[in-house]
Length: 100
Image (cartoon, rainbow, N blue to C red; front, side):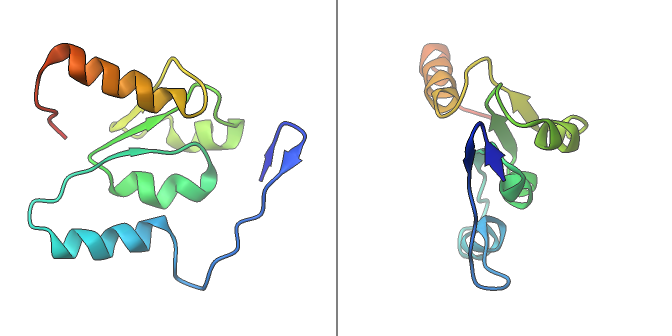
């Protein structure tokens, strides 16, 4: 995966990824709900398991194309990890419980 002029390589054991780890956690917690944040194709499995998934506005074209039709995906107005701060600020401002 490339991001600008930098290339990233993900190396994991077969069958181990964010989604498989989340599935194990969810089996331990009854009623487990999650808001996920991700920005790359390596996050797609993980994001598909979240009740709400937030992605930064600067995701790559391939990831944007794959995510565009998923109803629980919310596009942030912010880039990179700033989308996490934006979400938390909105949550605090609304003083409400999040329905995922």
